Length: 119
Image 1: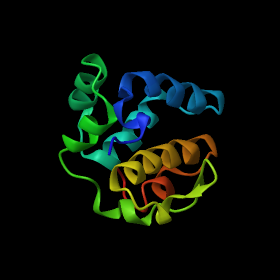
Image 2: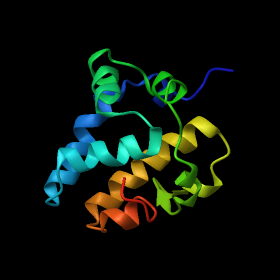
Image 3: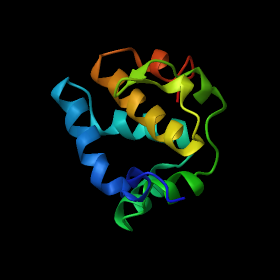
Image 4: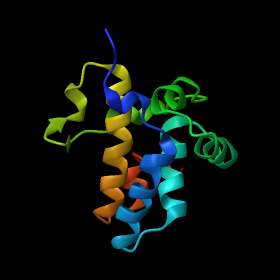
C-alpha cells in the first residue's frame, strides 16, 4: 500500500511555510530551525543539506540522527487530529513537527516548546 502523499513532499517545500507562519507572529527562522533540529537530531548543516537536496519528508525522518526522546510529550491537535493518537509513526513525526511550529506561532516560551530542554 502506498503511503500518504505528504510522505513524498520535500522538506524544502514545507519549510518556507513554517518560517512564514512563525515570522508572522514575531518568531524567527532560527527558532524554526531550533525546533526542527530538536525534534530530529539534525544539526544546522544536516537541515540545510535536506533543504538543498529536496529530500522528501519520509527520507528526512528516516535519516534523522535521533528523534528526541521527549517527542512523545508533544500533544495537541493539528488539522483536527490529536497528534498523540496518530498510529502511523511517520505521519506522527510529521505532525509533531507541525505542532512544534504551531506552538512557536502561539508565542510559547522556547523551553515549553522543547519540553523543558534548552534545545
